[in-house]
Length: 284
Image (cartoon, rainbow, N blue to C red; front, side, top):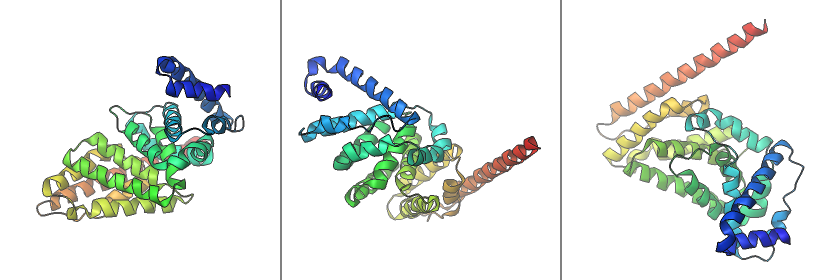
């Protein structure tokens, strides 16, 4: 009851909210750091106590608080986020359990609100909390209802249109990473890659049916700018091999983009072969 009272005061009593919120979020952060190391030390039943008979606005605010705390657990730059994407997704699926419990106890009843808040925080300038953004988005996407899946797909479509109108590299990087996390919904890696490929085909390969010439050029140019960030063969392979139907006078632009993708892909494969050979030599 004391825990519930503290969270209730933090939500409703503005005069005490700042210092109390800081203290509560520090406690949650320490708990989750411990849970990463030892998933069995706490079953998060405190959430059941806090939310019992509480109104919707309180529960949504509580979910948002937990999202903020989770995101703050790890920071990285965008380049690292691309390089570590698969590792972090696998860690979230196989090793980190508390995020799944948070979904069941907090996010499940407010999926769209939770995802919207995730997107809102992750599109802020200088966002660097990629690891748990991936893990939370993947967790919600893999468990959510059909309506929420449609909501996420609609967000990505709207986001792409916004980027076409107001092109910015950071926004395209965010979109590519977000789609990858949201399509990594099964234990089958190949199936997840295929799901990303389907999104790419529907939204990038066929975008000439949606965008005007300048918008089309902006998207291809941004994708081109994102190539140096790519570090995972499977996703870059999609960009390199999937054709993009060009608008008039855009054929060379598309061809140049795909050629650069293939060149970067070859460099990644060459580096991996070199690393593998180095390991063999060292072991000898």
